[in-house]
Image 1: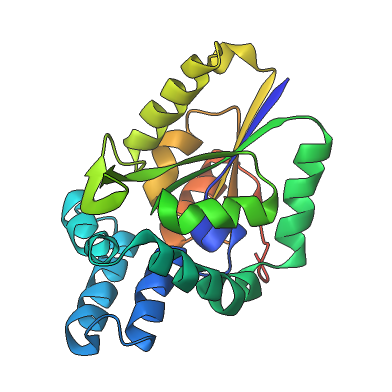
Image 2 (image 1 turned 180 degrees about the vertical axis):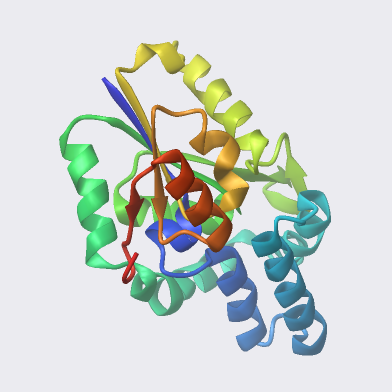
Length: 223
C-alpha cells in the first residue's frame, strides 16, 4: 500500500488558489482593491520568503467568508472555479494524479489553503482526501477564524498523522510514502516521507532537492 500526498498551490495548480481567491473577490468588487490587493501581495511575498505568520494571514484571508452567506459564497466559488482554477490545471498534473489513483494508492491533498477554497479543487482532481486549514463555522456561517491547527509547515505533519490515525493507519502502514511540493515551506513533510518530489520548486527547495538527491519534476514547464 502506498500513500501519496500532494501540495496544491504551484504544485498541482499553476498558480496559488489562496491568492487568486482574494484577487477574484477584488475583481467582483467584494473587497476593497486598495486595501486588500496590497496586503494580499505582501502576504504572498512573505509566504515565498518563508516568513509568513499563518495566524495573521488567516485573520486577513478568512474574514471575507464571515461577511457573506454560504449560498452567495458557493455561487462565487463556482465562477472562481470556471474562470480562475480550471485554467490553472494542466494535463501533466491530471495524469500524475490519475496514475496514483489507478495504482490504488491512498491519495490526499495537503494544503495550507482553507477547505472552502480547496474542497471543490480536490473534487475536480477526483482526489478523495483533503487535509486543509479549516475555517470555523457557527450555525452555518463562517466566523472568519480558523478551527484547529492550520495545515502549514510542520502543522502538515501533525494533520496528516491525525488523519491517518482516524483510519487506523500510521506512516509504517505503507510500503512507500510520497509528497509532491514546490515550496521550501513544505520541507518538514518532504523530509518525513520516503519519496519526496520537488515540483517546479522555488530556489530554496531546488537547492535542497539537488543536494539531497530528490527528484525534481515539472508539471508546468521546464524543471
